[in-house]
Length: 487
Image (cartoon, rainbow, N blue to C red; front, side, top):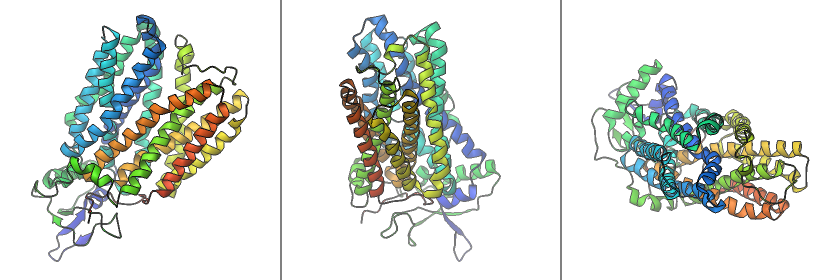
């Protein structure tokens, strides 16, 4: 920590967070953001359960049933970037308010849909809200001190798995007794709780500092210190920059900014209109392209492994494709399948949490990608059901874990001024991978081309590993950057 001649302390926000420490305050932020992730998982996993019931009630064709899921992902594609821009321009909290309102209201109203078209419209609107759930990640990330960031961000991401397991259990109880409308209504509950608690949570102090609102940021940091039983010294904050030769260090000549007086006109950050320009600036273009492929390939392979699990765990007795869970929609095994396969992600979470701060984000992802591709090799030939299930279980655990680490890595790489929009656009590219995967993989599996399907997923997974290798930054132990200097 720098000390001026007048004994006035000067510190960056990362130094302030290190002084505050990780304690009860961040624990409350973890609970709130985790609830948002649970809401996200429940609204997406509900698509696994309601399709067949809606098809039966309204006499839909298989294509019309599939469209219910498609419009949600289409909405998410739009919402990913939109809410990122909103959170960069108006704050993480306002972004959360908007996306939670849209998701909860549209989710609840969809339970009362009088016809197929109204259901499609409302689920698409809910999808737009769901697309911005990465805002919770950015918001929580900006409260966590550097030494704790990797492990606690993985703990934060584990709430997604909790949400999928909870939704499977909820569907198991609700669907047979009360129907799909009741499940839709109850599943919107967590989003409404997020709205109810909204006024109790703070804005990101990093965002406030970027906008020159240092008095508000300092007040939040002091409150966090009191909660955690630590003391934050009075002083002046240094706004971090990216500097030539050291992208993650604050330059010695960085302006010193007082936490006592608001300077709203200082450091407004990059306007949303220039976000795309900055993403393709010389300092970020390599990172941007690498992350786009990483997210695209990771999402593609994640849903691909789920598809292979659905088809191959039966021992390959069928050649014609059955849509995931469609033949079991009226059987309790549907809910049990989702429950068990969701548990496959738990070992991956444990492995990632154990090594992410030891070997770094990049090496952690590379190791898990390579091992996942190796686990798929035996599936180039027919295996018995137990072996197939075990191999796919391990592959899903690793692929899901790499995506969690990627979701930590991406917001760490980008500066605060464009973090929301950058991560949002990267997430949108990932959504495209999720939408394309069934179109490509379904055709291969439906035509009995198991070998080619497995090879395809191996190539994509290894491509993801290569994209990580080519990404220029390792963020382990690095401070977050606030402003990108383009000159």
